[in-house]
Structure formats: C-alpha cells, structure tokens
Image 1 (cartoon, rainbow, N blue to C red):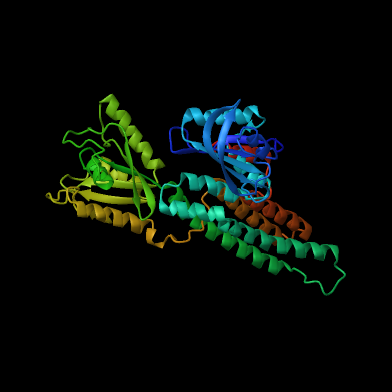
Image 2 (tube, helix red, strand yellow):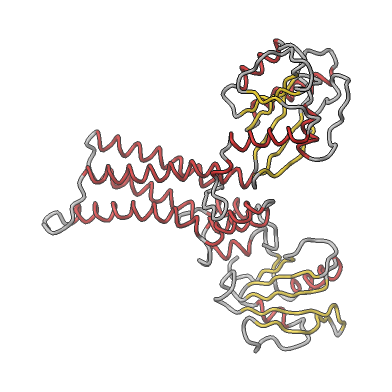
Length: 447
C-alpha cells in the first residue's frame, strides 16, 4: 500500500474558482508528466509550472502544476498538485486520467496517514489537522493550530521523558548493582516522581475540559414549563426568530436548536417542549425528550415565570438539576411577583435586550470563560487521548500500591513500562493498525 502512488481531489466538490488534485508517491511526477503538456521530470522542486492537461492530443484544461520532491513535503514522498479550473466534470476527468496512468484512488485520510507513517507528524498533530479543518471559531482554530505545530505533543513527551528517566535508572541498578557510583533510584524518589507525574496528568485533564469546550461547544438545554418564555429567550440569544412564540401553552412540541458564540465558546442551544402533564400524544413525546435532555445537557437554563406560583413540576426540575451546571432564570420580572424568592436565580424580562446579557454573563461566570487561555491554548481535546491519560492515572495508582506492598523492583519497572507505552499511544509512538484505520477514516479523501 505504501509503495502505491495515490491521487485524490483535495478541494470540496462542486463549482469553484479552482480545484486541486493531489498525487503522492514515488511515481507522482512521472504519472502527472504523462498527461501534462510540458516536461516535469527535470523541473526544480517546489516550483509551479504552467501548461495543459491533455489526453490523446485533446486539451482537458489549462492548469498550474506544483511539483514538490521528497523528503521536504507533507507526506515526505514526491507530491504533485494539479491546480485546475473548478468544476465537477473537469476535475473528475483529470483524476480519471491520473488513475488510468497508474495512480490509485487515495483512501480517506491517506495523505495524512502517510505523513504519520513516514515520521512527518505524530498522531496528536494528525488529529489537530482534522480539528483545524472542522474549527468553527477563532479559539478552536488557535487550539487546533497548536496541536498541528506539536505544542500539545510536548506535554506528552515531557511525561514520557520523566518515566523514561525512572526506567533507565531502575534498569541500570538492576543490571549493575556492584557499581557504587551509579545514581541509585530509591523507593522514596520513585514515589516522589510518580506524584509529580500524577499532578501533571491531573492538570492536563482539568484543562482538557476547556479544550473540549473550545472544540465542541457546550450542549445547552432551555428547560421549563409551558409559556414561561423559553422560546423568547432562545430567540433573543440567537438574535433571530427561530422558535415560534405564542400565548398558547404547548406551542413548542419538538426541540428547536441554534448556536451562539460566547467568549469564543459555542453554546449549542436547544429549546425544549414545556414540561407538564398532558394528554396530547405529540406534546407528550416532546415533554419526554425534554426530560431526557436534562440528563444529556452540559448546561441547563431553567426558566421560571415570575408571575406564576412555583409548581410541583418546577420543584421536581430544581431537584433534578441541582448537581448539574445550571442557571435559574426567572422571566417576566416586569410583572407581579407570584413566584416568591428563588435563591441563586437571575431575574430578567425576555422583552429587554439588556437582560439577555445578564444570562450571558452568568454563563461566563459559571464556566469561568474569562480564565480560559485564549491566546495560546495548549489543551488535549481528543476523547481518545483523554481516555488514555485517565487510564494512566489508574495504572500509576496500581504502581503506588505495589510499592506500598513491597513488590519487587523489576515488577514495578514492568508496570512503569506499560504506562510509558500507553502515553506513546497518544502521540502514535506505539500504535496498532486498527487504531490508525479508524482514526484516519474520519478524514476526507483528499486529506
């Protein structure tokens, strides 16, 4: 597979100003040269060459061809990129010609996979490339760029180096116990360094939650009884009339979604059906969905009506959300207070635009958005990497138990090697083919 020369369209399908067909492999230059009007075999590396793609003396398109010779390329192989006029028919025709001439259609993410296998990037950097492509905010872009640049990888390399130091010293002392000048690693020193490593992993995991929020946003459910103003609040937050607002109870029967960016963090807002007892089958389904979303959401905006007394359903929801991230919003503050005083609630009127800013400020405080590193965010964001770090914490606890139980030092060494290898899975220094296939299959074909 790695000996094949691969080709794919790297730009989005459809009509555009240009499209790019990328070719990578030992025969990349030769294959493109066979359909190009000028000689590419002897051109300098990293040059752009003007000409035409031709087939049996028929001109297919006027193009610019970029030639980049190994090893100073993304895949560390010869790469040729054909910059053609954008259009489905022309782009597809050029790709077909290249496949006929000996290239193979690239699999999803295969260019990036080759960059990894050839040592150009590690797995964290590869995942950063996909995050960069999918980034929806400026903060997400900065976060992904730090992954691509290798800054996030350094966090893991630093942990591996600390464990490697312990392993090296333990091994020397096991193999050469007779030498007095060897720096013997004592049990207290191992425990001290393991504590330091645990503290570092815990810090990375705490900060990874910030990275996850930057990358994916916060799933936010607007919950409450019918007619408390949930849809009005959604519309005000979004700045558009996305949800239908009426005085009729049960107007919202299914979820209505939208997104806003708050201090660089996406809030994925979901307006839910009003929670109440109902005989209406359709509305009842919406109510059940609302109850399910309380469990799934990462933030609950619980809306109460200042002009209505607290109900049994309200009390149930207050109990249900007490251990979750939540903001209690008492709406219709311009009307008579029949609700009473609700502790930790913010009082607003959805009719007042300035009051909507009060909700935003409360969310900022709840998630400490002002504390999140924005200029140079170096966080792990990938669920795979985070799960490995959590596993390493458990394994370190087991090593500490082994030390406490006076296990032989060579057994402790084996456990430390397992942790060192697990950390290597994050950057790809240790991996299996199944993992790579799964990871790169999520990439687009031309990447």
